[in-house]
Length: 272
Image (cartoon, rainbow, N blue to C red; front, side):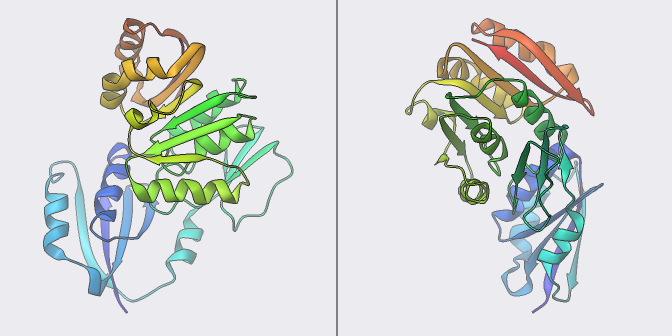
């Protein structure tokens, strides 16, 4: 069985979106690289018209090529491109095929599949670093737009009592549950948005690594989810967007506490 491989050149912000778009038309293996990513699908399942319609919407922002390749071991190829990530002196993110490292106080094992959140992207790194500075013990935590569930797993490892996670993609929710199992923690995962989370309970900590526009739109809802004195950790936006994010947070009663930066990305912490 041969495969159709699409090689996409795009920026980091679009990469997650495009992988989700291609996932919706049957692509099931993705390899990220410095310029974008590669996506593959069995030739018999490939629909050229569907793919063209899906990617034409982004034609001014990306370039891509399509080629046919002989079957290869995509798991091994993915493994060859995936290195462990040191988030801090306390935390490492690794795949199940990497050996454990006793040097770290915390290790998270991730099998990302099509979901966002391996620790390689600056926004995930920054969110995890901020989590390490906040007391999670015995607290209820919400992870909005959970992807692989990496932030939710971190919350449990830091001692959170109950962790609820949501994502609009059902395969992301399935992946989050798989990664929770790999790390021997329990998560409550819901397919949907923050509005499904509103029906559950209030939280001492809310995590949202999404994008600027969604964060601005949903800020009032985030504030309602958080207990008095609770923390909101945000990422998915650039350094130049921090003032408008802070202004919106202040307008709904949230107070800016701190932020971290990496590669022009930001993760900020607010208090209710």
